[in-house]
Structures are given as C-alpha cells and as structure tokens.
Length: 296
Image 1 (cartoon, rainbow, N blue to C red):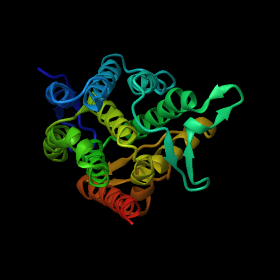
Image 2: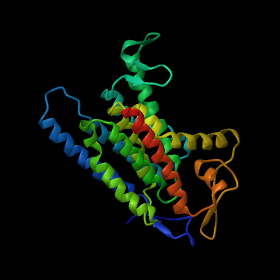
Image 3: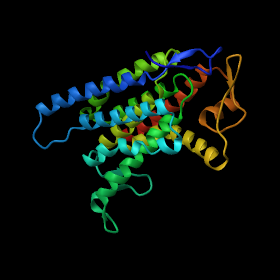
Image 4: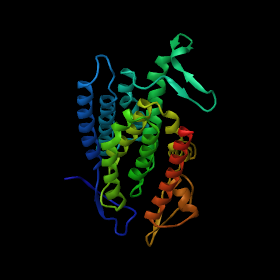
C-alpha cells in the first residue's frame, strides 16, 4: 500500500514503508473538525475557533509533505512552502499580537506602527509566517534516523501542552496520541512517517504555539532544532558541503560536524538507537527548561 524506501542505517538496508505520517494528518484533522463542530454548537456568534484553524494548517502541512515525498522538491522551493500553511492563522487573526521577548520585553504589535504599516498587520502577515516557516523547516531537517522525526516533536508538543491552558490543550489530545503511536513503530524501524509526517507535525507545533500565545516556550523547546539547522545551513550555503553518517558493524560515526547528528557521532560513536536517545534527551532538557521558564 505504501511505497518502501531503504533504511540506510540498518544492515542490508531493508525496505521500510514510508509516508505513514498521512495517518497523523487524517486522524488529527477528523478529531479537530469534530471538536470544532462541538465547540461551535456551544458558543456565541462571532467567536473564533482555533480547532478549525489548526485543522487547516495540518492539512496544508500534510499536503506540502506529500508533495515533497512525490516530487522530491529542492530545499530552495520547499523552504518557503510553510508560508502558505500559515495563511489561515494570519487571515483568521489567530494568536495574540503580544509577544514576550528576551531583549525588548513584551511587544504589543497592536500599539505600534512600522512607518505607515500597522503593527498588527506585521504580526499576522509577517511574524506568524516567519515562525511557521522556521519551525516547520527546522523540524523537517532533523531526520534520517529511526525515531528522530517522531520522538523529538512529541517531546516538544508535550512541553507546549504543559504550559498552555486547558482550553487550548484539548486541541492536542488526539494528535499527540497518534504521533506517539507512530513514534513507537518508527523507533523500532518498522515505519517512516516521511515528509508528510514531519511537515505536518512541524506546522502543528508552530501553529499551536501561536494559537495558544506561547511563542517563548516554543523558542526554548526547539533550540536543538535551531542549532541543527544553523549547522546544516552554514555548511551548505557557505562551505558547499553536506552532512552524512558512516556505519560500520551497526555503529554510526562521522568524520565531520555539520549537523547535530554528525556532531554527536563525531565524538561518540554508537548505535542508531542510542544516538536517537541522546538527541531525544537533549530535547527533554530544553522542553523542561521551557516549562520551568513559563511556570516561574
């Protein structure tokens, strides 16, 4: 049913079903649409419905990932695709145009002007697409090992749920459960979620943080993603060299430091499963810091 691709970090490179992230997209969308229907029946006229907006974003992200799985798009093209997935958030004015920053305190975009452009327009049509684009691409760039594309995003989602209010938390009950199930099989090397899954979960993380107005927690939680993407982009754009792992008798190693994965494998040669657990533990740490900062 699903196309199979070789698992390059397993002896013999066995063929593994790819693209099962489509289950995340379908189940999450159905759940959020049902939640939207329930909430709309018990709400007043004119109220916004974040469940519907998150549904549209997940569908956009899943479609972009599916397109990439089919056509193998170049990075120069797919790097800008999340901008379109963020359109529902900006057009429907989801999120609060007040952001907490580390250098300038809280910025209220509704009270400022950039020359003749209202600050709210900058927030909804500039800041939101930027957050969605950076987050989605950063999540998509950390992959290649069984579990990286599923365990790490799940850790980030759990952190975001913990720091948000119950009214928003309900949006992620089923999506998180579905992705954890996929993570269980992905970590065992039985499935790949593909770009369909990684793009969809990336836009979920960004969209949920914007809707729940927890961008500060998002930034802290995804610091390993940002570090990984920075290493990759510096090497690709300026030094014209990519990152890759070598395998000898089930042991992964790297002779360079061009990504988070190869940086760790360069200093600590180990198995794929242990390498994934090490990187996941880094995300657990940054997620815990995000929860602590948001709490205290």
